[in-house]
Image 1 (cartoon, rainbow, N blue to C red):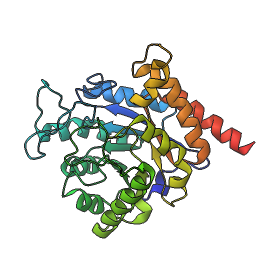
Image 2 (cartoon, rainbow, N blue to C red; image 1 turned 60 degrees about the vertical axis):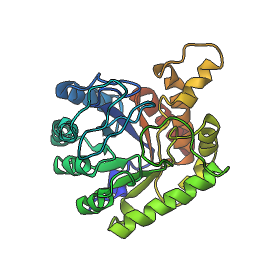
Image 3 (tube, rainbow, N blue to C red; image 1 turned 30 degrees about the vertical axis):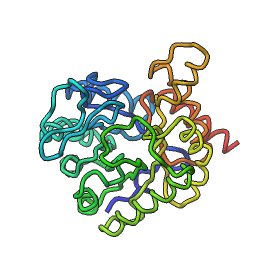
Length: 296
C-alpha cells in the first residue's frame, strides 16, 4: 500500500505539473495529445521543478459535455469529435508507462474507474478524481483495489457535466465544502481506502463563483487543519484571470500565471500539501520562496 506520505516532499509543498492528453482542455487542449509530445512536456516540467505529473485524461473545461463511460470518453465540447471510452484509457497508458519507467511520479486526472484502473496498471502513483468518486459507481472500489493514494475533490453537481456555473452551497460555501469532503472521505474509507491514502481538494472553480473561490482560499488554513493533506488547484482559473481583467488588461489563461504563482506562495506558506499548476517554473519558485520564508 502506498500512502500520501510516500508522495510528500519533506519540508515543502509539492508541485504537480499538468499535462493534458485531451483535445479540448481550456488551457492547452490538443497541444500534448501526441504521446511523444506529452512525454517530452512532462520531462520539461520535471526539469523546471515539478514533483509529480498530472496526466489529464478528460476535460472539465466550461462547456465540456459528458457522455456515459460505457459509450464514450470525456474531453468533448459542443461540436467536438466524440472519443470512445477505451481510447481515453489508451491515450494515458503509454504516457504513464513511459514516465513511470523514467522514475517520474504521476497522477491520473479522471472521473472514470476504468481509466483509473488502466493508469494503475501502468504504474500511476495517485488517482485524482475531481468528482470525489461520485461520477462513477465503481471508482471507490477501484481506488481501494489499486491501494494507491487518491485525491477527492469537492464539486457539487448532479451529472458532473462541466465546471461552469455556480451550485447552491446553502449560503456557506466553506461549510458546504467541509461537509461534502467529510462525506467523500467516509465513502472512500467504507470502500476500503485507508485514511493515510487520502488527500483533499476544495475544488476551486468547480461550480463556484469568484467570491466562493476567494472564501475557500481565505479558509485554506481550516482545511489544512482538518488533518488531511490538501491539494490546491487554482491554476489559470477564471477568478484569477479576473485580476487582470478588472484593470482592463489581457486576461487569457496564460495571463493568469502570475496570479497563480501568488496563490501558490500563499498556499505553500499556509501548509498546503500540493499545488496543481500549468506553469511549473514560477510556482516552484513561489514554493521555494515560501519554504525559505518559513524557515527564516
